[in-house]
Length: 358
Image 1: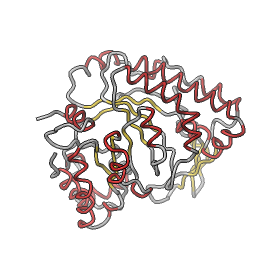
Image 2: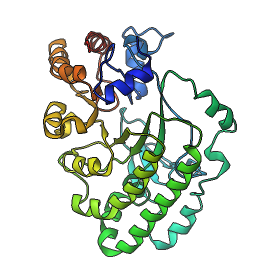
Image 3: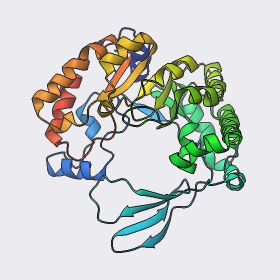
Image 4: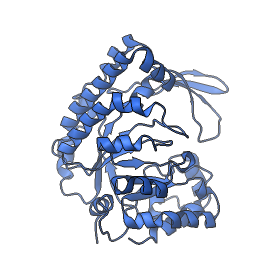
């Protein structure tokens, strides 16, 4: 019988396994989902992962981004809404009594002009002590004989910049002041490389992770040609460093329709894509035909179907089962499980997934 780490590597390399690797990146992160499940029969003294053959997967507890983060601060409260600054320095407005889950309104961003960047850059010192837990040296030794999967977060190039500026301002700056954007992307990459030199030392990671969120329902947020030209060389620097550390599997998280971006990522060595959002037209069966075994896939299970009837859930699982059996695919809901999914549907879905044989 394989352990979780062996099963993961067999899966991403399309090798024989004792059973499919099972992992859910997001799960029911919404408080409203858990509250509903508790009302509908989930035992309060258990965990939802106990209802499937979940494999242990962990991220090292390192801060790969701003350090220190911005202090979360409530700026205004009315009867209807609350205005606050988040840990990225973005000012947001949210409804106080709005239905969950609900997105806040983005009001203002910390990076509005060139003069704002130096202050933000002071939060990008790679050797800031708070990036690493005080017991990091002993933790690294504890990872040596593990039987579970360990991931290192690399961070982001497009997504972080979009967070700091807002999508509209970033897109305008690409035309109005591209040298500045190129400078910022270069300096974020320089920081990430210095951070990786420290974080990779003494640990054999199983995969590395980018988080970009750079597509909407019908396609990328920016021109793929421009994306390849401007961002490509910097991803290459990061991927080459990751490969030198012996890490072959490089994961990237982005919602939306990614078909035009996947060939770019594969060329750069980023080979594991999630969540393959079905509502945005991402079909794992189609993607396997398009990209073959070059692409490792995660997600691809329509969370909307989980809110429906059992027949729909069974059809969905049966459709992806051949990919699960083949390898190179780790099925899970294509983002957080929303509160319209009944507890009994989730349990039924897990039973079907657990019954798939390699």
